Length: 265
Ligand SMILES: C[S@@+](CC[C@H](N)C(=O)[O-])C[C@H]1O[C@@H](n2cnc3c(N)ncnc32)[C@H](O)[C@@H]1O
Image (cartoon, rainbow, N blue to C red; front, side, top):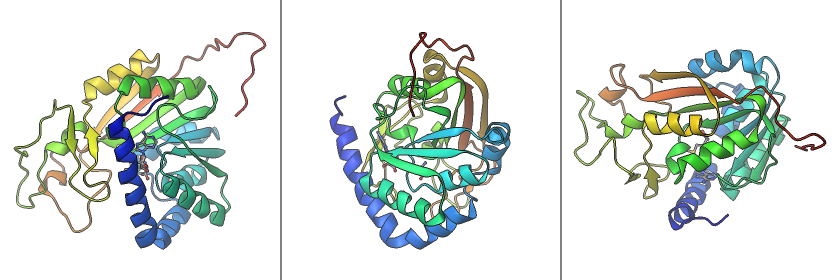
């Protein structure tokens, strides 16, 4: 599949950001992965039963991989992480191998990852993933394609309204240069400063998931951001405004695979 020019230049930005992450935080990321603590309480609450069934997980846009260690330590049988950054996938693989965890990484661009249909009991993604998708319908179709019948898609993401809030510490304000219904914006913070983020509102996200044939089981909004920039204590993060959301969806239980066809993970 051809890759659009914005995705190509964003990929360069992520290679650069991943290089900085490895250079500055490799030891911290290893310790964080070893602790298995990167899943939030909200994630653990929503995923508890699913992880209790030892799912095979595909993590789209797996980044530094700390969530993959946490998923395995919370019950996943294995995790296959996919990311288009060669630096991020290599570093995450090194850390997983050091910890002896059943986690494998492959390089791939979402959508269009080099994995077979029905590879996963759980497709896990988020924490700064959807904003890099130029085509949300294609993303949702990719997630649905990867799920086995009855499998789950779980997204834990920055709330689409998050980009509107200033980081003022005295009180929250709305940025003059941002629009909830905007199409895109330029990232102005570490790690991907300068990259073009796509904006998807909650309606568009839910509609894309439903259009891909998945059943939405829950959609929850939270005041806590999934990530706090070091040294910043924005009033907008202190409990009154939406800063993250979680969506859990399921593929149809009925197996519609043609007789005789088999799939290898
Ligand atoms: C903010 S990070 C979040 C990753 C992960 N959830 C984490 O917490 O580490 C975004 C990741 O998405 C990857 N990425 C962005 N666009 C992508 C695409 N179209 N295909 C594959 N990976 C992509 C980047 O390389 C980066 O590692």
